[in-house]
Amino acid sequence: MTFLAIDVGNTRLKWALFESARPGAAVHAHGVEFLDHIERLGEGPWAQLPVPTHMLGCVVAGDAVKRRVAEQMELWDVPARWVVSSSEEAEVSNGYDHPTRLGADRWVAMIGARHRMLAQGPARPLIVVMVGTAVTVEALDASGRFLGGLILPGHGIMLRALESGTAGLHVPTGEVRLFPSNTSDALTSGGTYAIAGAVERMYQHLLAHCNQEPVCMMTGGAGWKMAPSMTRPFELVENLIFDGLLEIAARRFAPAPL
Ligand SMILES: Nc1ncnc2c1ncn2[C@@H]1O[C@H](COP(=O)(O)OP(=O)(O)O)[C@@H](O)[C@H]1O
Ligand SMILES: CC(C)(COP(=O)(O)O)[C@@H](O)C(=O)NCCC(=O)O
Ligand SMILES: [K+]
Image 1 (cartoon, helix red, strand yellow):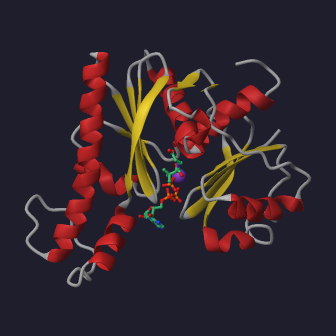
Image 2: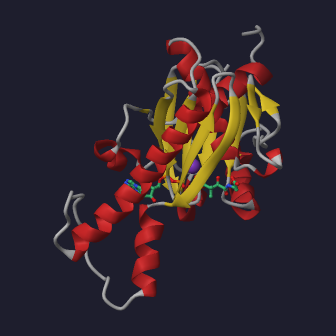
């Protein structure tokens, strides 16, 4: 029984074939493609894979991209299934005004993070930071209710916005500095501390709301860039979306109850 997990963001598709649809399952194979290269999957990395028993994915990149992924999956007789955010799943509840409008990647990452925390110790309030094309900062209370979250531009979008809106900001990538003394460092540091500052504020909001120190988990392709600049203890997790997809898949596909 193998399980294919797919996470399609606005920049890249991440996939992993697990040996079962259970949390902690061993990874048989995994890979990443930029969205422009999705058409390579079927004749490339997926051609040699054993046929997955089940697939579950999450996609925020739009319907055209979703169809292109489904086309690549035609090499197997496996239906493409995509998570839709809902008001409750895998013991996490959704406080969004319109639960189905919440980005599926945010929902799935929260489910992954909540169960990761529960596997390590008692339930606490939880901050989930995802640093991808955009950055999201979610807050959950100790009961597993999503209270709300922040969306802000990721590093690339911030830089491109500044480049396109000004005459004098076309410079190479710089370093994160406490007191940036050139344009490159000023831009790189500004973006990094904007993100770190947003996380710090959400941490304070959640601490005040719950009166208990939150656990903080960070994930996403650019998470490693943020790690040295964070103000609170956090765990950098490779892919919370895969963790969440395994939790959901276990409840949908696995024969034995959890
Ligand atoms: N080797 C890399 N290739 C592409 N993006 C990278 C790489 N290393 C870091 N990044 C950063 O990660 C972001 C993409 O992360 P990812 O989690 O794949 O985003 P998304 O889920 O939105 O597609 C890019 O915006 C970029 O800033
Ligand atoms: C916020 C996002 C753009 C993040 O996308 P990503 O950076 O993972 O590509 C995505 O989760 C999304 O489109 N959300 C829908 C709106 C919402 O969550 O309120
Ligand atoms: K993502």
